[in-house]
Length: 398
Image 1 (cartoon, helix red, strand yellow):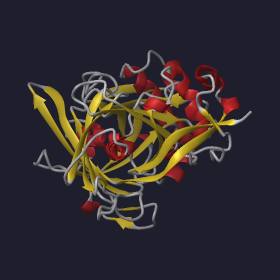
Image 2 (cartoon, rainbow, N blue to C red):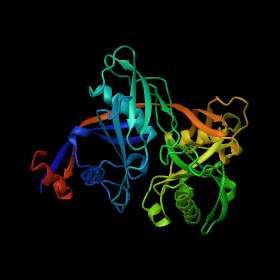
Image 3 (cartoon, rainbow, N blue to C red):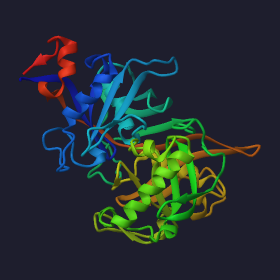
Image 4 (spheres, rainbow, N blue to C red):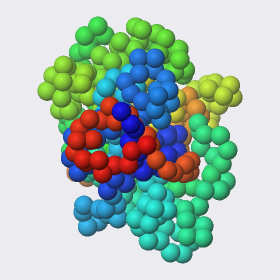
């Protein structure tokens, strides 16, 4: 059979890459999206390389974004994120990607979905996965989003023009509650691990946090070393399943195992001297907290931004596992410097305690983005029979 071609843009947002589609170019029936996204990205691939598609073999570059008109009055665009599994025939819509969120405002401006004038654009993005509003601020250059600038972000070579992302009211993005169990800390009885004190926090994306030392780690381990340690990966996976049930994301462990993204599971430790993936060193004096994160069965080389935001929020909740590990401060509005394998992320989080109830007002950070190419993504017609039948030949054949 012939191939079909769909209009698309390939973009970098922060430390992620994704194929970006206009909603208008996809079937209205979202049940058909999975087969398109899997074919375009090159999944499932038992070799883990996605050579027959646009993916890059790891979760941070196995992504799809869909942008369209807003479905609510306080937004300028709708943005849906899809995490495509590398080795499995699965597409997960349960979470947002903060890194790719940084590319959505510039995409909307450059594609004419949002009209911007002057030196700065402000685009209100409705993330349909989490039902949250993200405000993106970025500079303009002769009517298009600016690319060149002086901002460096860990995990991306070179510099770029900053995009400020402001996550408004990020609490409860997955579960509807900032503290899904109502508790700052809980004790989970994890099969094969035992009883663990954890903090389960849901801000931008749901995350379960555990102390590194409680699972036999120092906290500065590199991703490859962790992924090569079958015992620790099994422990982290087991913690994620039990937390999913405790947070109300899944009714049982079997159902939790089918949701690959949330909750993210991470372990934290105090500020420490460490070596980065680049071979460079960071000093404990330059950071406030050390963190590592796992999702989709992989350890992140650079922390996902939504989870970095959740980590910063958790660090401001007194008594949480993250708060206990973070450097003490008397300034609750000071940015938090989080050390991770690719460098240091600085995240701002405004968290308030109102009559004993914790509330996340806002979180913000800076990213860079760049359009890499535009044109068509080709998918084998044999892989998307439902799409071929539904469109009755309206899609272009190659």
